[in-house]
Length: 574
Image (cartoon, rainbow, N blue to C red; front, side):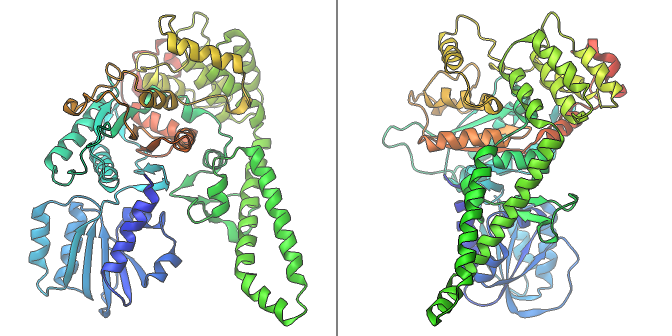
């Protein structure tokens, strides 16, 4: 269950089926990102693909009949029309057309009618309709999927197509379960089920001959766990995304003042950068010592290269120089990123802020935490965004507490010129009235299993105060793999597949409203323990993008659950 290898196989297939010779590849906006996250440009050059063009942008009318053309696009109405125009007036010798998802027969017929010069050699569906971020993590790059707390129709359709493509590329025909009480999750699960039923011949994979349970698709809702995206992260990939923002495995440092010119845009892909691949889940402290070791090794090699005396030394130098150059680039790149993370952590006083965030997320100590929050959010060294996140976490945890003082904290935020309206919006989006499951371990005595789990957690203590929080997803997945009853909380939509008492071997999780790198870490740990889990989301959030999604999802709705904060609400919510 490796998404990156799946996409790579598809791209290899496209390049090899068109045979030897110079090729151009025609892409759309989304397939450009899909390919660039799996393959670098030099990888494509090795496969004789020399030109990359966008079907949807202005192109020259020059005829290049010595080139073959690979077309890899999403089967949207707009793309079909653009491709039809291309085929009516072909610029290349032959066309090999690949769609990233299921395409209706009528569209194929229409394209065939437009291909009067018979230049199309191949038309196929290759199910690479999602962005593979890590081997076990995919995104659909939908920054906002809701308005008025209901699905945006385009986002719903795109999510259905993306998940269908993931299932087809992994050859899974799963039981579909969704989070009970979430209309968004139920609607998406229903659409996916209808698509699988309609295209049943495509989903006719191996049946469970050995009695193994069928795979599971679990559709979850971000509104059940608003805490995870708000917390500051301390593992490498998550921390870079939180502080510097990774987009499609690219890191843009052009607005950072002291970054050298060569490092203004960096590619951070575990597949194309060995150091990053090995350390993306390492925590901040470990990264520092690892990069120090890498520096020492680099200096040792640099000294070896100075001693070029004999002919054999020269030969060795020439052979090892490309690796030396590559290592030099890796060391400089990651030193640059770590330097930025370190500067931001110190400037924003993040060690103190993050420790308090973790305490609020994991422990119920109302009065002590309230005093610490008041002190920190009034401190000018703490940025207004970090102060707002502390108040948001407090408001979520103590929403029903008798002495809850969210209004008092919002007054301090307002005095500092912060956007106080964020907090009531967040409560409407994911307050106690919405959430199911056990977000803050408010365990009833009757649930013996969870009570024992919490007691053991309490006795063990925490290894690291900055990483004591575990996302709700981890507990949900542990319940799945231990074969616990899922039914009232996660009903199945295709229940005829359900009578298996054994837990599923393979699970695909999709989070409406975005996944996070902290959840990807939890999935990575489960996969290392021998399970098979793939995580996806409408997008990959950091705290800023999550807050933007919350604001977009709640704009224009009438607030019913935040009457005490009415003076801090935005005017269109009153």
